[in-house]
Every structure is written in C-alpha cells, then in structure tokens.
Amino acid sequence: TFTKWVNSHLARANIRINDLYTDLRDGKNLIKLLEILSGERLPRPTKGKMRIHCLENVDKALQFLLKEQRVHFENLGSHDIVDGNQRLTLGLIWTIILRFQIQDITIEEVDNQETKSAKDALLLWCQMKTAGYHSVNVRNFTTSWKDGLAFNALIHKHRPDLINYEKLSKANPVQNLNNAFNVAEDKLGLVKLLDAEDVYTDNPDEKSIITYVVTYYHYFSKWKADTVQGRRIGKVIGQTMETEKMIGEYERLTSELVKWIEMKIETLSERQFANSLTGVQNDLQQFNNYRTIEKPPKFDEKGNLEILLFTLQSQMRANNQKPYTPREGKMISDINKAWERLEKAEHERELALREELIRQEKLEQLAARFDRKAGMRETWLNENQRLVLHENFGDDLPVVEAAAKKHEAIETDISAYRGRVEAVVQVALELESENYHAINRINTRKDNVLRLWTYLQELLKN
View 1 (cartoon, one colour):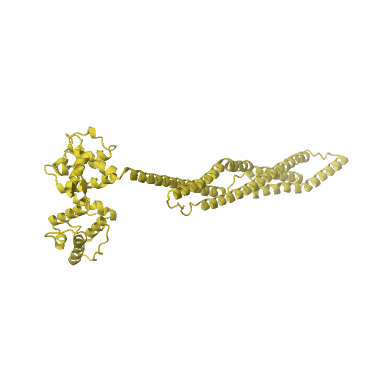
View 2 (cartoon, one colour; view 1 turned 30 degrees about the horizontal axis):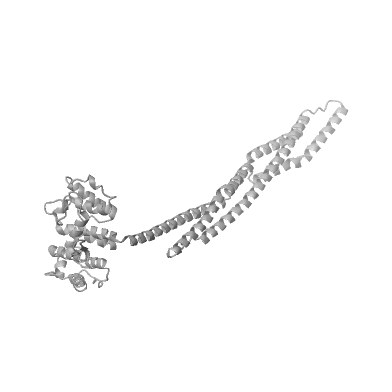
C-alpha cells in the first residue's frame, strides 16, 4: 500500500519505484517525493552513488521534515534508510503520510462544535458521510471496512450516479471491495492503493486503510464549496468549455478547408488533359462543375470561419479571457492567401483548358480536311487506274496516234498530281506531330493513298 501511495505522487514527476526499501536508499526519490507533497524546493541532491552521497541526500530530506515541517523522529537516522531498514523505512513513510495527508484534517461536529483532528477527524468524517446506509457502521479503520460497503457508501454519498448501492450485499465482501476500488480508480482517478485481499482479512492493516481512505477525503472535500461559488465556478467552467469547443471547431474546420484548398490547387495545376475534343470538353465540364457546384460551399465555409473567429474572440473578451489567436497556418490571413493561390490556379487551368480546346478543335478541322483531300485523291487515283488499264492502241495508225496522245495526256496529268498526293502526306504528318488521338486511322488512309499512287505509276511504266 505504501509503495502504491508513493508511486501515486511520484507519477507527477514520471518516477516509479518498485521496492520501497531499496529505491529510497539514495535519498533522491525521497527528496522528490517531499518536493511534490510540500510544493517547496529542497536542496539539490548530491551527485554520486557512494554511501556518503546517499547519507547526505537522506539527511537533506530528514532535515527538511525536522526543520521546515516540524516532524520529530525517534531512533531514526539517515543510515537506517540507506541500510534499507524495513521497519524504520515504513515508519518514515507513515510519518510523511500523517504530515501531508492526515494531519490537517479537521471536522467540526454540528451538535457540540467540538473540533477534532487527524485520525479522529477522519473517522468522524467517514461516520458522517456513511450515516443512514444500511449495514454500514464505521467504528474504526480495520474491521469496519472488511465487507466493502463503507467504501461504496462514501462514493455513493457524493456520486450516486456511480454506485447502485441497493444492489450491494454484505454477503459479497470481495465483490463489494473490488466494485468500490474499481469505480474510484476508473471514475474518480484515485489510485488503487489496496486490493480486496488486503481488507477482507482477519486483521486489516489500519495504516493502509487510513492511507487509502484519506484519498477519498481529499477528493470529496472539494465538494464542500458553497452554492454561490459552485455556480460561479460552474459558469466559468461552462464558458471555458464552450470557448474550447469553439476553438476546437474553428481549428477542425480550418484544417479541413486548408486541406481542401491545397488538394484542389494540386488538381487544378495538373495539365494531363484528355487527348480528344470530346475528352477536353468533358474536362471543361468538370471544371465548370467545380466552379459552380463544389467551390461555392467552400467559399461560404471561409466566410463562416471569419464569423466564428470573431464571435469566439468577442465572447472571450466579454468573459475576461485572453482572446484566442490561431497559430500560424490557421489564421484568417493564411486562409485568404491560400484562397488567392486557389483562384490563381483556377484561372490558369481555365486558360490551359481553353487553349487545349482550341487546339483539339483545330486538329479535328485538320483531320476533316485530311479526309476530304484523301477522299478526292482516292477517287482520282482509282479512276485513272481504270483509264490506264483500259487503254486500247488498236491497229490503225489514226487510232494508235489518238491513243498515244491520250496516254501522253494522262501521264502529264498524273505527273502534275504528285503535289496533291504530297499535300495529303503533309497533313497526316502535321496531325501526327500534334499527337492527334486518331492518328492510326489517319496513317492507314495516308498509306492507302500512297499505295494507290505507287500502283498507278507502275501501270504507266508498263
């Protein structure tokens, strides 16, 4: 119990001991414990682990208790603690408990105005708080607590919402003890200094029970504040909680809005558009949806944040609280700067989309021009192939001369047509250089025109 009690206070300094008799020997943990309990600074511990250093540190702690706290020791010296004397070490811890946890307890009885102190005062407090609870009769700090009902009654008296006292039975002492200890630890934050087995025994240790019960006293004594002060404190707490809630809401909404802005800036900065007129038109439609559907509510959120911060700061000034100042990155000016970057990215994306839309429209016009030219070339080449294939020179000189003149005219016409075929090829190459989405179809038709052209030339040679 004493080890748990010591740890419950040393925890404030992130210190934990495992063995009461060995971990206090060097005096350092003892000095820290007294500093925590008294709220005062003790002389700095002497560095080193030799016996002389340990004796000096323990002596600093004992001198503080003797001179500053007026605690008197009998037959106790620094060497007793350094040597790990169990009886005297326990006696020292009990003396510290009495001085800092029990000595200042005073209870004024209503009937006779008699003032009691220390152990009697604590016992009286327990009797007053448990009066009227069935099967509870606190007469001492040993057997009166064995069945666990007194612990549960103390908690129920102050926090009836935590204990269903009517369901407890004197026949279940261990269950009662565990119920009280668990509720006190889980709901009130009181360290479990005792186990059920420590209390439900033939001879419960009085000092251990006093050490634990006094934690109840100190916790529940805070409930003695008068009604007016309680209401005032409650109002202040309520105001603080409300402002903290508003601060939390402001920071949450700010984080979400900034996160959305940064995500949108990244998206708007992308330039991987769809490589087709229809695709770019879809991209432009999505951009317009963002601008008309997605963005306006975020703009409203930005305005609401300004209102929320103004309301929060005004409320805190009215409550005489230090006005809340958002940390860097969450100030209204930071949000406005981020919004300006968003609108810049938005403007640049619109320009890029419009530019890409125009480029895709020109490519479609160029592709349509290619198809017209290719279609005319295919028709002309097929027709001239037919003419060349069906040429008839005959046997008569006039017929032969006429056919020769016709062939010469066709050959001249075909030779002059080369430029037109090359024009089709040039349009195809231009489409390919601009990464036209249907370039495979264009190249297939271009190759067909070239094939027809080559075939026609071979016919002429033959």
